[in-house]
Image 1 (cartoon, rainbow, N blue to C red):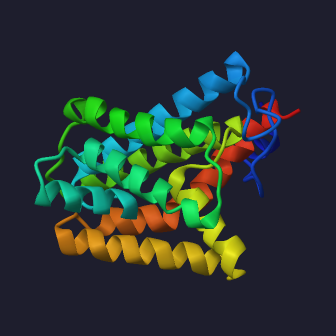
Image 2 (spheres, one colour; image 1 turned 180 degrees about the vertical axis):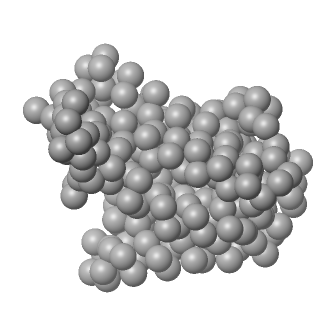
Length: 223
């Protein structure tokens, strides 16, 4: 493949593409097998990425900081804490009149399960350079998982649905809503004992561009 072809392959996408496995509607209760496979594999890869970030030990994504904080204050695992947070956020959909889909429920269950199942197999790093590399790998896994999960188009995750629901009801800019939620969650999680560090900063800076590249890659299977 030529250099130009390689650059085209990894060209960032500007929006979530419609692929051959995408559901034609978010509230589809009888999706194709390929759609289910994309959803399940994407969410499992996402959760594995979170487990990799936890093992790096220098900070995780804001929502996992919150889950870690809850875990520190209870006897719950990080995965169980993530599940509890997802369910609580889903209840916040009620006043916003948002409707969950198969992807919404699967998001809560599979990401939480993947974190707890995969975390024991992830090496825990103690030196900075390996920690940075492992954090980057974790972010890439989260981005890859997100690309498959989002293109399945079976409903937003509980956190994304909360964000879009608030935006619809308030008409505030989506970026401001997202930033406000992330900062609030990160602050609470850090207060409870979650790990905020350079890995968290790497996630905040890197997840957007890397996700765009991953979506650009799966776009080659667009309809």
